[in-house]
Amino acid sequence: MRTLLMIEPSKGPDQTLVQDIQEPLPGPGQVSIDVACAGINFIDVMARRGDPGYVPSWPYAPGYEVAGTIRAIGDGVTGFPVGTRVAAFTFGGGLAEIAVAQASLVAPLPDAVPFQSAAAAPLMLTTALLLLTDAARLRPGERLLMHSASGGVGSAVARLAPILGGGLRVGTVGRQAKVESALRDGWDAAITRGEGLAAALRAAAGGPVDVILDPTGTGLLATDLDLIAPGGRIVLFGNAGGGEFAPLPPLGRLIGGNISIGGFSIRRLAEAAPERVATALRRVLGLLGEGKLHVAVTEVPSLDDIPAAHDLLAAGRSSGKYVVACQKNSPTLAPRGRVSRSP
Image (cartoon, rainbow, N blue to C red; front, top):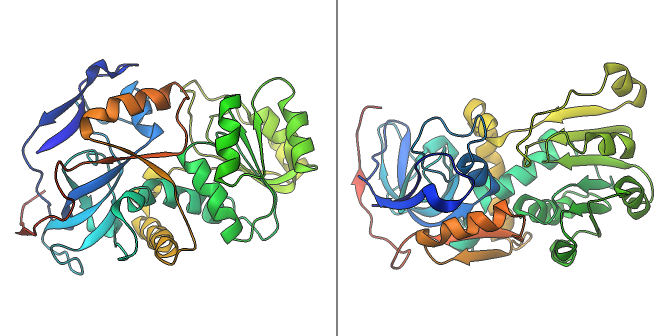
């Protein structure tokens, strides 16, 4: 089968190849999936450039979210007959024709949800939902600020926040050219990051904000602290710049301002509490199936085109969500069977 492999760290696409490898077989508690579509994410870029903590060993097969049909099931798996349409969170290896996932991180796909949309659910939409609910504890009417608002997770947050009852949504973007796409995704205001950012954001929000979602590391933390309201929550959930983290503010600043700073990693949560991730995945798939949530995706034609998409993400020139068609032919694939294999 064909899969995307990163041979060694690189800032460019030169070490990213599509190769034929042996089909992966599901072990106990796992399923294999004929991947119709898979999500492309900035976390792939962080892995490609060798950021610490993202690659267990080289060569590395990236890819965290897939949609397709169950190909085979391992020992102990029930509830997922072969041929079932599903979406799944994978711990790598998702940018391939066949992927293996823990059955605990797989959810059935409603008939109304196409594979292209479903491929954005396990990582992107689920991250957005958990950020707003579990991490930030967004309450009805609260004002929300998010940095990197024009990316995939940003577009998902903009669409999910009003469903959860959130109030005004203000986002920041890295380039003026991204303002229009952020507004189109549902942000009430989009501000280009630069000099005078805090003042511009305060004016756009009409004062302090209650929740800040920040995937940029700690580079904007001083701005976040200037903007957060008493009782507000700041959630740090990435390190897009790839630099060293700065120290967090003194405890007195947090206590005196009634401010909470928390962290979020869906990868770590999936490892430690897969049931929470799976519950959120089922919820966003249900919202898609009911027509209450819509996600705009750009479909990349094939696995061979992924490195170019990674380049757009790395350069900050992407907009919204990219998914890739992983099969050369129709995504309606023939069932296979049960596989038993020791881990």
